[in-house]
Image (cartoon, rainbow, N blue to C red; front, side, top):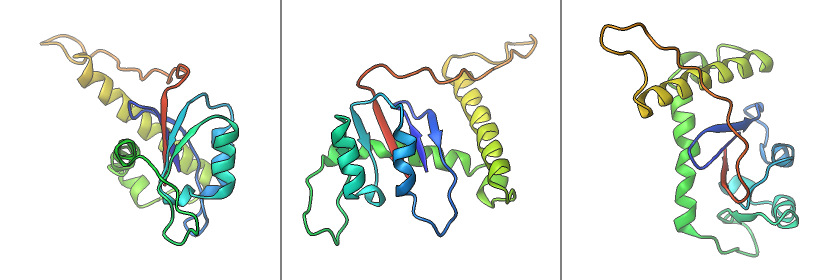
Length: 160
């Protein structure tokens, strides 16, 4: 489970066993988050999460599960922004150790995710800002900055 900002930068993540539901971790990941909107997939369509978001004044863009008695409306256009988190997962899975989960301990796997994210964000910074290797010059270090806290009202995306 991961939370990214409107630019696709990883903000928070949680490691869960493959056979465990991830929605119980959502309240923990939302602690201290300052946002006005959250986009999530159907796995987060629970009454507890919807109430938590409503209490915090966060607009939930979550498609309802098909077996829900009361079907909620959601903005399909906004829901398309969820691709940002899926793109992050695709980038992370380019690292074979993450895709096949060579690290069996959660703490080591978290370290691998952090390292992979550092590499991904360094590459993004190098290509976006035009930084990197100059012709014939020494290689410039691309240290990925720590994600800055988002201003009030920035969009967050959360997904499996």
